[in-house]
Image 1 (tube, one colour):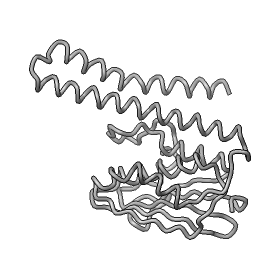
Image 2: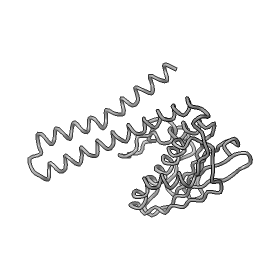
Image 3: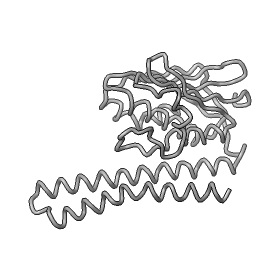
Image 4: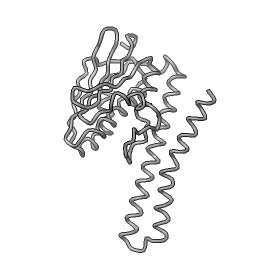
Length: 226
């Protein structure tokens, strides 16, 4: 347990160095070379980008802390949650990004209610849709749905992006692993948060090939989630 805790605290500390170093570099440029309005504006844009990256990382770390809180609360954190309502709340946050990329979204919930922690379900859906929208090409498609399968309830998110090779699916769940992508906005925590939320609900998450040609993320909730 101590080893896991040391790993968890050391990795965020290492990851924070990158945006903080970028902030310092941009501040130094502003002090020593920002002699014109154009140069000052360029430095300020760099500062804002670095601040956004640091804030995004901290938000994801807070999400992981919230998952730990759900695990400690156990059944007391669970209740009947409407999937369509959670989806609307998530898309109120992600809608502008999807519109900017002209991504077409479709939701089809055959199962409407799920026994879960609402904050956890929001985090799960938010991170899956963030990834789907971010990695789908401009004008692509993202679909989310729920269905009953035997004694389980499935939540799936499909996209028409490049997908992830099957050989790297396990690796994709590792914290801070971006799979070599040069992504200025991601921090490599999205799928690990999804997996942590799933485990808190005794659910399982896996990656598959999507019918849309990209990636499918599937979360299988047990029958007691009905």
